[in-house]
Image (cartoon, rainbow, N blue to C red; front, side, top):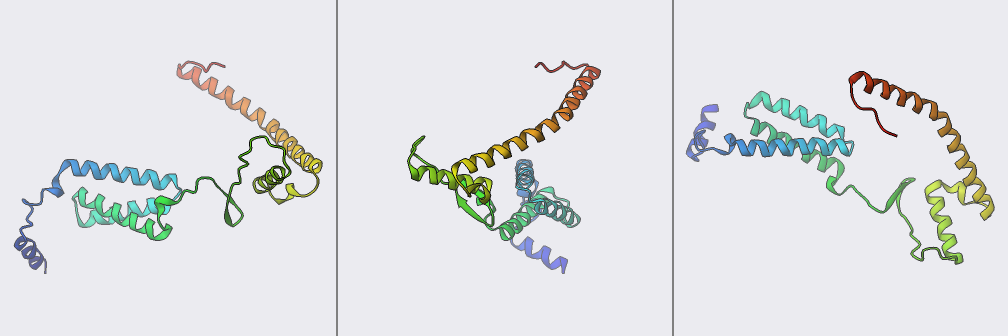
Length: 188
């Protein structure tokens, strides 16, 4: 069977001497660049399954071929086909200007009038506030909404106060670390 496959390739003129593409260093570096770019991209979009698949396909392919051009090419192609089928058109997964709220995507409404004081712009701003903060902030009069926002702000400030000692300890640790390593201390 293997001899028949070799005869087919020889009859087509594809011998090891004629197939320079598989042994070209520039193609190898280009595929290596694409492979690193793919791994970084899949990591950035938190698609770790594709990263793991890339390495598994590469390891599996390396058992059958010792040529890194073949290994990288097959790994890139299989992983990108998987990502395309699994995630749809994965290159178009960004939706700028949209907020992920609830189950659907909602377009963020922008009041183009600047600081206008018309009733419709206030209603639009209330709707935008409700979209960002949740539906509980949109209920009640303007004063009640402002009170709810101020209460939330006070809670956030209290939580940040709790974190302050931890940040001070971390800053002291970094200063000690830099002094022991002989590096310059950070300026404030």
